[in-house]
Amino acid sequence: MQKDIVSALGNEPTDRIYTMSVIIRSFKGRKNVQAHLFRSDIPEAELQATNLHQCIDTDCEKYRLEPHLNGSLEDTKQMVLESFTKKEMEAIVGYLEERYHTRLEGIFAAPLSFPVPQGTMPLASVPEGKSMGFIRFDNMPGYPLKFNFRAFYDLDQHEPNVI
Image (cartoon, rainbow, N blue to C red; front, side):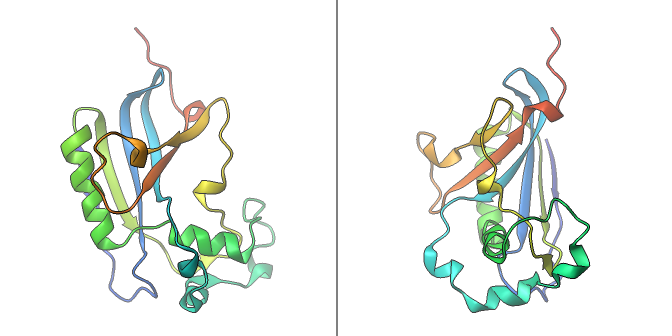
């Protein structure tokens, strides 16, 4: 299993900096499915934190031609808070290596690039559908971590398994 962890520079405006993804060998009839991990239990107090403003580029005029940046400032705050601390990222890597090493092709983590453009939507806001959904790791039997995380996938982005 490939593992690629990019270290943060150390001058980030928050400790919630790591984005993560995994490649699942075979999932729901598709191969090499990329799933994006995110923290799913954000406390309301964290959403009110004032230091989040320094993590977000609020110059909306700069991004007005980017149609995918259609979220609010609150959406972008939530997106930043879906990221993991270094300690959480390391705990997730350990959990995935121990429990899912035979099912994963790779685990990837990298720091966010700051400032994040205002309008970036949180993964939790993506509606589930026929090909898109969430893996709820926190609902798995014997889930050992002290925080919850989930993974977003889009099956339409991946080739079917051929037998």
